[in-house]
Length: 221
Length: 309
Ligand code: SF4
Ligand code: SF4
Image (cartoon, rainbow over all chains, first blue to last red; front, side, top):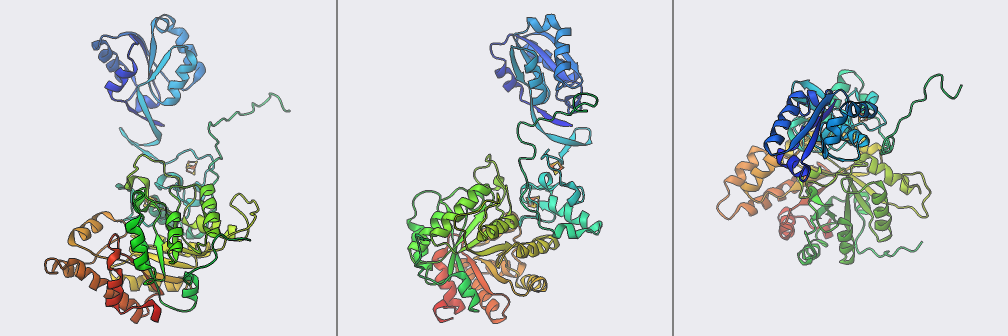
């Protein structure tokens, strides 16, 4: 799940300066769960923009705005409202926003900040447990990610700042390395903790990432 | 190979340690800016009173005059530097390049640290690097000593350093900290300075644990000067891994008005004496944090004179 937070409305208004006719895109997947770009938030945004004197030419909320072909199809389905707009306000993650950018030549504006790939604890509560490093080392650390759950992302044990099992950066956050230690001890696998980890390959998923799977039956064989 | 620096005024930390002497080190915190007069004054004041001086590397993630530059100043003034290198602000390329330079300019000992997190400092929006951390930094140096950088490429001329590391005796929990201590030794650490210790009983327990893991590696107790009750309250609340015990808090609180600093000096002198007399460790590292002026007084009260050791 991609976690997003809403930008302040004033910031959104500033982005839309000079754009009187706006089309709003919401996302039925992550942004709906985060309550930043689902049906209710899109309706609320529409009302607020109209109160500010904007014309909302149309709104659409669909699954996976990040799916570029899907987005183009949705834009075709809403051709009239899309063509009437000066620009687009996208209420989901940065990937969705750029997916919309591929579907139009007009200005595209983000309504959200994209913060992390998150796990859902319960409604409205999200935490980051993986930061997509491209070279997964979970196997060695009792399935607790040191790259993400330790603030410094270090691989050979805790820094000196651990206090009562909390991180030096924030007493509300668990020290990832205390969690890893406890887990490996429980599993009887402290030998993994004792092993020295050499330098990590931070270029395993070189930016910008790109994965193309070969399709079965095509090419090759 | 031509080294641009080959006349050291003082013996190296390694030489002091290997001669079996009790090592006394001080610390220089570079200023925030180019006004280095006071720092030079501190260097001159300490250079003959301690065996070597640590130079902090953007301590507490606060941007300052660089540790490497300060190390060179210490050498110029006839002192011995212990270069602190953290992994917070530089990636492996930058660290390796700095180490090459340090070596050619006469730096002989490096203290390897991971570094505090960025948000605790004064450039809160900066990107924390942490491309490597303390254990890997020790390995990087060992590779460079064998003539290779961390990319596996051959160096035209390697380095040689007395490799130091730190350990936090007051960390909670302590077990993972001790495992990391062991890893640092395996990665090449030859000596340790501890983070601040105040509670000597706790320090003794730590030393017993450490000696069980390795009885050869050199360990120096890190001592921080207590200057006032305000400072104690601040440290207990804010500095990770630091805990000033009640008896010392009471001793400081009972000090007559205007006597807090002198009481702090007395406490540290007593701790140094205890470390030496009870042979608790191989040396002490004195962190006077801005009050470097009083270090000679602390040593005098402790009856320590490095020229007579
Ligand atoms: S090691 Fe990398 S891929 Fe695996 S959980 Fe951590 S960040 Fe994600
Ligand atoms: S306190 Fe723990 S989680 Fe925080 S930076 Fe240090 S090792 Fe990582």
